[in-house]
Amino acid sequence: IGKPIKHGLLKETPHYHQKETNMPKLKSHSGAKKRFLRTASGKFKHQRAGRRHLLTPRSGEQRQFSRTKNFVNKTEGKILARFLPYA
Image (cartoon, rainbow, N blue to C red; front, side, top):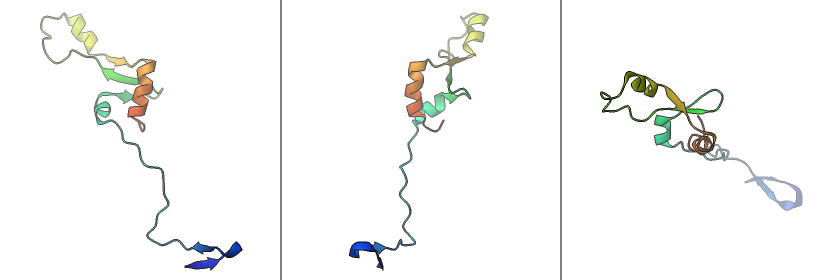
């Protein structure tokens, strides 16, 4: 049970198998994990769309441009920050 303390209340001794209760861990959005990367400045970058097929009729300049990374705007970055709390 425990030692008596002020006002006659008993203080229970902690059991060895009881842990401190911590805040629950947040889950990351698994789809966002695969598609976005957070930079050191806190922005999110992603691959441009349209790189899967039908690239032959496009000019080399278009194909080269689509290889570059793109950054998410500020508004969508706030949403992504909630999706990826530990990124």
